Image (cartoon, rainbow, N blue to C red):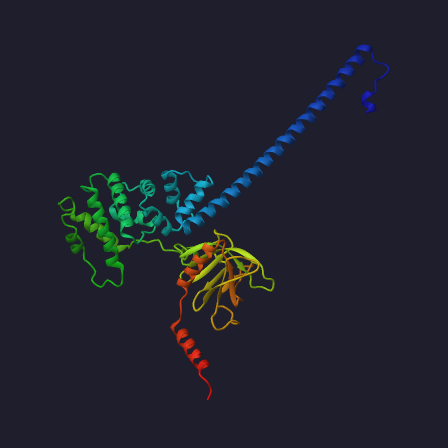
Length: 397
């Protein structure tokens, strides 16, 4: 600093003034550089923060979308509602149709069930969904292959009717002049689906010939016949390659819980050395009681088969509205059940009884009633129990 302020003695006043100006300018430039550095650092910091905030938002969004898909697979309407409420999906039939058409992470049975509903809004979604299919210049079998792969056709006749009606309308719209009416397309579509079953189901012994298929479909084109060549081509296409029907993934437990007898939050008393109450999401279905840590979990934390169990109300000093699952006539026997440990291992349960607390008296009574109806009995167990009872009541001579 002292060197910067040093002024040689042999300078003229003008030169001294010039030197002073240069030094002042240099100082100003250094300050400008420092200010620019500070601004760059600030902007860089903001960009980094923006990036990490955006990243966090995206991660949170992706997490919620995944949660919404799981909810959809368990209950399509609740899943859609969740996605709309969290601004992940617009409440329009077009947006919902697009979501179902992409189908990422969605179960095709759940898609079919949602599209087949008769609510006015669901019917609009169905038509928007069908509009996303492009059938132009495809023959009817090719179009059906595409359509029937995008979801799994539900079992109810009314749902199938609505979906095939929407398909026939769309096919005729994409291919004007092929059929006299959408009714013709509709009838022939069903004939093709039945033909697929007849030709490829091993239980059907009498396989129809092309001639029989042609004669079965006479007069369906508004009283007239369809070109024989068209029908023969459709027949050959199905004969050579059956429809690929989307299969449910057998490992996906969510389908066990698709239409439960009952579900809801309950408190469960732990079976470890330290007895603690834990909030769990319970699902009652297929004569089993499943419990989950979160409603969105794919795998249950525990499974309690209800075979040969009994249920009773109990008083508990810690919790109200309690009931218990237990093995009658054998209070020390461990109930046949399994649970998933924190590390993912599936182990046998260690409960001799399961104590559960419901939020209200009404819910307790409803759960007890539903579980009683779901408890199954092994006939051999009944006979054995009766025999044991008889044996224990017999007096020694």
